[in-house]
Image (cartoon, rainbow, N blue to C red; front, side, top):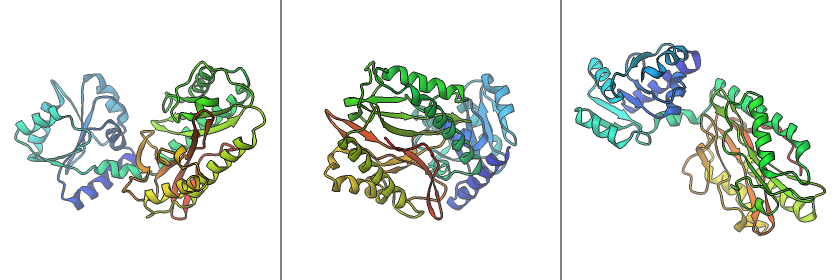
Length: 354
């Protein structure tokens, strides 16, 4: 097992011991990769007293051996529940803790019928994933660089008569040329009045002089993602455009300044939201202020008024307030930060000016 994955298994086993968990079944794809390095789409991991056991099928036999070390590999003959029962019998395991968010109900029923005592695992791996280690941060930084370099190259094409759809495709191609095997999500290019839709789909609309254009995009690097948003003006911005942009930037800075280990996520959300509410645009900001990024582009924590989580050292989080005015357009600015003992350190470097 490579060093990052080995350290994660050690931390997981420590948390398991503290929680009285003897054996843990890991079924979510991202959690399997986090613990073993295995990238295949079909695989589960059993973590117990000895070496972790990765169960997969014939299609991934070679890949599993290439991508993992220090992990026992079992190739299933029929289905993985039968293979899992085989491992559990050999290990004399009668109680099995599982991730309640990702275990299919039919699989749960099969395991119950096999006589296993099933218990909820409490999302232990997901909790570990909130705090990024050195290897993860390096990959996230690489994904950020790929996205930022691509956007800088795109800037010369953002001009009157350019088509949203074509700009989005060009940006995605640029990110792929720089090594991104996929985009983090469907790229958003929202110009003019379309900018009032936070998750607008790219359209065939042609950009006009004076338009605000919002670009929301992200690249991939070694399985990790970036997520960045910039709103730019095609031409000279109007007084209202400058005011709204300045307001969103002020809200973002307030959230970043509020972010320290131990601070409730809802407090960070409120720091940004209160700035926008005090300006009279509270009804024009209706989504969360940010979210975690890692093996998934949207993961814990959420910077939301409904969140019960607190900020932790090592979290990588987006900060993305916005103002969306129907019939006019919108502004969103999104940056990625990593939480340190001294507060939030901004990882993204793209200029924020209109």
